[in-house]
Amino acid sequence: MNAISSLAKVATVIGLLAFVAACTESNSAPQTPGAPPPMPVSFVEVAPEQLAITNQLPGRIAPTRIAQVRPRVSGIVVERVFEQGSFVNEGDVLYRIDPVPFQLKVESAQASYERAMAVQLQASQQATRALASQERNIGTAQNADAAEAALASANADVALAEVAVAEAKLNLEYAEVKAPISGRIGGALITEGALVSAGSGENLAIIQQLDPVYADFTQPSNEMLRLRKALEDGRLASLAPGEASVTLLMDDDTTYAHAGRLLFSGAAVDAGTGQVTLRAEIPNPDDDLLPGMYVRVLLDQGVEKGAFAVPQQAIQRDAGGQSQLYVIGADNVVELRTVTIGRSIGSRSVVESGLNSGDRVVVEGVQKIRPGSPVAPEPWTPPATTAAAPATETPAS
Image (tube, rainbow, N blue to C red):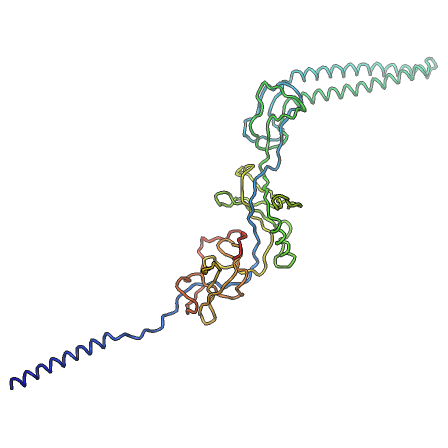
C-alpha cells in the first residue's frame, strides 16, 4: 500500500508540472500583430499661381552726379570755407581767391565806362548842334555827318565799357568758388596760399550727389534673351510700364529699406564679358549707399503664369540628387514623384514639371513614411514668422 501511495503522489506531481508547462507555453505563444495606424502628415494642395521673375544680379553704387570744382579765374587761394566730407548746397562758397586784383579791375572798368559816357554826351551835343545848324543853312551837311558818326562811335564805346564792367564784376564774383551742385564734398585738393589758374584743369574738390544714387549692374545676354523668348512664347507675362521694381541686398543679406526703379537696359553687349549693363535709380536719404559699394540687385523682369510652388522642406533628394516629392493619392496613400525644381521664392521653390493642379504634397512627416504608406493627412500651416522673399533664379534640378 505504501508503494502504491507513493506512485500516486508521483503521478500527481508529474501531472501538475505538465499542466504548468502547458500554461507557460500557451502564454508565451506569439500574438498575431494588427495593421499599423496611418501616419499623420501635413500637406499643401498646389494650385497655379502668377509668380514674379526676379533675378539677383551683382552691381555697384555710383553717384547720380559728379562735379569737379575748378577755378574760373587765376589767383591765390586765401580761404577754404567748407568742411571736408560735409554736405554742401548748390551755390555755397567753397574757396575764396584773393579778390583785390579783381576789385581793382572792376573800379578801372567802371572809370572807363564813365569816361565813355562823358564822350558820348559830348558827341550827342555836337551832333544836335550840327543838325540844327544844317537846318538853318548855317552848317554844312558834311559837319552834320561827321557829328553823327562821332556819336555812333561814342555809343559803341559806351557799350564796350558796359561789357568790360560786367566782365570785371563777373571775375570778382568768380573769386568766390561756389558749389555747382548739391551733394557730399570730398577732401580739399589744395590749401590756402596755393596759386590756381583758370583753364588749367586742376580740381579744387569733388562733389558727389548721393541722393538718389545709381546701381549699375550686369546681366548675361543669354539670360536676357531667354526671358524675352519666354515672353514671346506666352510663358511669361511682361510687367506693366513703371512696375519694374529694383531691390538691393546688402553684404549682410539684409534688404535695403528703399526700393528703386529701372532706368534703362544697355543696347550693346560687352564683347569681353558677354554682359548687358543695366542701371537703376535708388533713393538714399540716409547716405547708407556709398559710391563703389558692392550690392546685389533683385530685378523684376516678368511674371510666370500658371506656376506651382511648394515649401522647400517638402523636397527630397535621391542618391543621384534628383528632386522628389511625396504626393498623397485619393485613397490617402503616398507616392514618391520625381519633379524638376526651378528658382526659389523665399522659403518656397517653383516646380517646373511633375505636379498637377490639386496635388497634395506632403510637407511635414516625410521622414516617417515610405512610398505606398497610408497616411492621415491634414492641411499644413506655415510658421507665422515665415515671409516670402523676392524670387531669385537658381539652377533647375
